[in-house]
View 1 (cartoon, chains in turn red, cyan):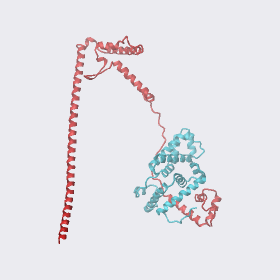
View 2: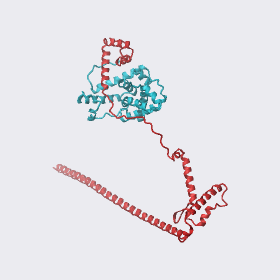
View 3: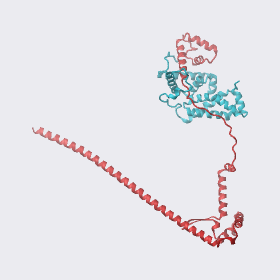
View 4: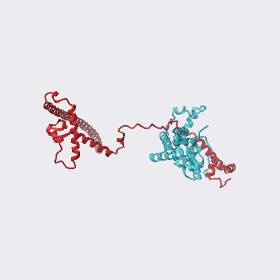
Length: 260
Length: 198
């Protein structure tokens, strides 16, 4: 028996199906089901669906999530560096390099002898003097830090001098040591040139080898392609020849027949 | 005597992280099951479980206790699942694997009284159900999952989904109707009387 309050009303149906809703409403719907075949069938089929979907279970898995409080990490001596912005780190690095280069009297030259890097300690004494004594004509803005730099440099030299053995204990003369150093530099440069030349020769040889291989491969491929093309043409010629012969036979046959 | 969720929450807020680990132990399986049934992929479900607990732990000081802890956790999980589905822009369910894995047949959830044939049938049906579920819109699927597998009330689902009670019931009904049609089409399960749709 159709009842507009219950038939086609999903809310009442769901409340009854899941037993979630006012008890009176469910009891009333139950009474309706005893009289309404279609509603009873609907409830039965949905119950069957509910039973079927219980078959869907998630796969077994290992869940071992835990909240772990980590001990406070020990700060390294340089950890404050990571807190600095990148530009500050770059500026600090530039300053350190600049000061180091200034202290060592770094001299970089690039000429016909190639790249030459010298430190102030390897220079002749007069050249060193130029650096140690700040020029009187230096700009007013540069003067203070140059003076500080020169003072630090002089102080370091004094310390080196004090740490070094007495001049009388030195072998022969410092000029000889300087000459030996210069000679070793020349030898070093000659050796570098040799190495560069050897490397160039090796590169050229490898390049020539590669080129030869490429040319040989291309030649092989070209020959193979030519042979394939020639074969293809031969096949075509054979087929054409066969067709021409067949036509000729046909013509002869027609001529013979027409003459009879 | 079992400690309630609310007590464990209070202890966690007071600084006892072990209490939160007890909450994890208590809820990780249901949350995993919910995430798996929403996403259909084990790896994604595991990730969601981890994210859900981590998010809950971080947000716990702001948890007012107006809703149950479990409802709050379900809401976080459903939101994360929704994010995963949106981000991935892909079908929420993985393709149904072919055949039956023998290892599955002897898994620990198999009742001792169930025969191998029954297990195979059940697994097969489970795959059909998963495929049919994948056809449902997200709201219908989550309504069915929360009701059928987690036993939430209509009211709780309505609060989680942010919709009226009547909408939850309609979603459930529409979802069950689609499932019935799909499972009938596969010829699975016992024959039953055809119901009429209102």
